[in-house]
Image (tube, rainbow, N blue to C red):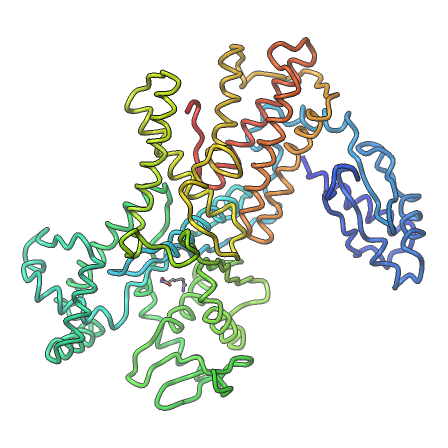
Length: 585
Ligand SMILES: NC(=[NH2+])NCCC[C@H](N)C(=O)O
């Protein structure tokens, strides 16, 4: 099923050509979903934009377009409104036939993309021995959802975890490892750092207070770079310890990534600098190798260079990103590269992209984008902290969400005198708790900051995961109560929708593809959340007005089909956000 909006676009395009000639063949009809159902379902705004070039009144232009337009197979006669909007309303027959044409199809009418791309999504990317903080959580949740949506559309997605696993801080960490856990390198499993963040703090403290320790750390950095076996082994131990911690979070979130940390690109770093030099882009500045940038200045207004090799010969974060970019294009064959990090790194990426573009490393067919997001704040609008004022650990945050979901559920079971197994309670608490955290994040426009509130995200009402999960459960309840097998309902039946709420719901179900297409283009998963929220609201409005199991045929079957579609759309949509559904809760 081609999205309705695409079909309409084609028709309006054809009408433009018929009315004004071939010159308008490439003109965008500016077709959008109507902002208000009063104006129908879609609206073309092209007439206004043509007023100047055609030197005519927009209304006159709209009239000529409509005179050349035939959409009678799926729309009521188009209406011209205001200065020259052309409004389209889908016919009942079209809605009914569209919906019945996708009964039994798992993709719910959303086609795979015609020209799939190789897409790299660089997300999560925490740092070894440092805390995986809420910023990484946002990156993990948003990146995973973007990857899922692109995969669903048929793109070939490579999910990369660009873990910060290299750098001079390893000198101090390894030195401290030898000091505090001398057995770690000789005895298997002797390392029980447990809390690597505390370990990092202590190492840093030793580094700051003791010159001998500092010297030993510097030596370890040299050894690490020289790949001395002993030092490499210590580095490996630290990485594994962190990896285990990260993995617990990924398991809880059910998120899968391929780790390809910064160290992976070490062998390619000298080449980056050498090639920049060959291209004449490199300049020396106070002993460091730099590329001077266009459009970036420091605080005093002087040109700000991007350092790619420090005066001591070491490489840095930007050099690694340049090497990674080249690798992803040349070796991974990426057509699109998406970096999901907080906004604070916008400058870094703009600089890296500029250097790579000037070096000619990004072919014109490849799209490279930074997908930035805002902060997660505590209820006081400041940095998220525990009651005692410490930074919140991700593990604790997720556990707390699950714990609160469990308490809410137990209260509800108690109130309803319901008895459920431990297994059931565990499962519901986990899906609701983790789902609530994910959904609270994804439902915000990612470019804004948001306030983290357990109460809000776990509420059964409003734009929350529990509200959507509950709508799904409610529908499963209808199927159980009426003993209807949703998998087999409506096949071959003639659907009939007459009630406003039925039609509104059916149209909304049919616009899933448009929503997913929009998310693919602007990488804003909150559009999908909004869509699902509206779907649940429309379902509830329909269900309040229209009896289902008690209705007579053909209404009964048509309405059961609507129920089934709503449930399947919720399930599919939530899965694209990384949230599973529950049959009961
Ligand atoms: N290719 C990249 N630079 N990806 C993002 C890395 C994020 C970095 N490790 C951080 O914690 O801030």
